[in-house]
Image 1 (cartoon, helix red, strand yellow):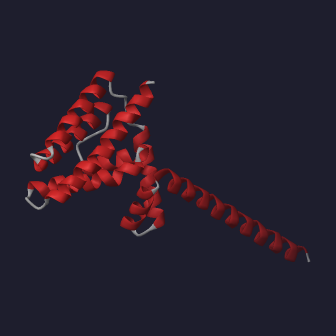
Image 2 (cartoon, one colour; image 1 turned 180 degrees about the vertical axis):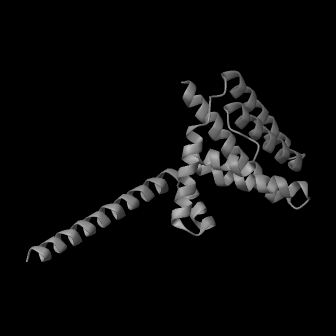
Image 3 (cartoon, one colour; image 1 turned 90 degrees about the horizontal axis):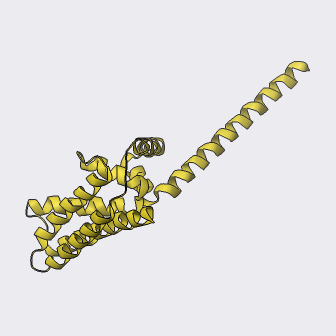
Length: 181
């Protein structure tokens, strides 16, 4: 009889541990989904495996925590805002040039804020940690900027790219303004 009770207790402990582990995994997945929003879904779709996608997102968080990010100065913020306003105004006459300028402007802003800028995919991953809502916009805008250099983007593509860049520029500038307040 003592052996039967021992086996039952062991089985119950194993079941309880399994249930606790499952609940922990669900909670951790839920936290990543909440933090990354659409970026969680994109990463999951891209990897095809929930564990791999979540590992990638946790690695992004870890890498991001080691970055020396700093707010733009008030002068830089004003300069970038004016530069963006001029760029948008030039779109009607030179849409391809406006997209190329937007791509370079975002790169400069990110560099000044402390983001490593050597690799586009890494930039998009880094920005997704704090601003997952605009990471996909950034990817799409950059895709159009690259396509435009090959002559493969029409005016509507260019318009959508500038709109997507605007979301990222606004986010970076508004974040900077909140941090300085």
